[in-house]
Length: 205
Image (cartoon, rainbow, N blue to C red; front, side, top):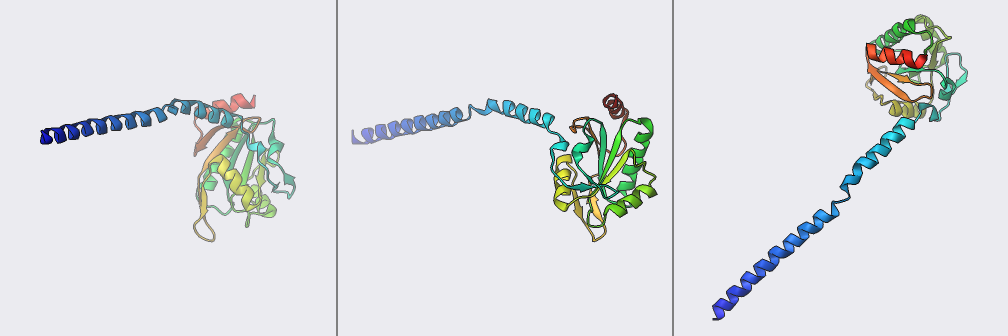
């Protein structure tokens, strides 16, 4: 009888343990119920991104003439912007060539080149570069600014860069189309396809 009683107690203890584990599992499941709210959060983030303008960034920039310029000075016109540096001999000349090709297709677009290497790309160097590349100053603006302002703009445009030697930078080769309010519409690495050009024309009109 004593053995039977101990066995019964052991069996009851096992049942209780299983029941407790089941309750704990249900508790974890109940804590995870808020997960369906995630799509709402994502939608709000997307909506905020749609409203954000590059022109809202602070920064003290100078153009190739040495004059101060703000990014917001392009508000009201479509802009193609690229971040380059004038001593680059690889991807930057390709990006500028692509922008020049687009310039020939639409006279209503403005072009902004921002230096990733402000220590070497002062106003005079930018002016010389513009002259070497035959960039019409009525349509092309080259900017230099502080390291902090360059980093902020690069982060906003998703341009990654780093110095690999004292003279060379590794960087993303992105061309970004901004609408009249400075919002990112399209980004292209290399040649812009026909759909991007069509969108550019539509914004420019």
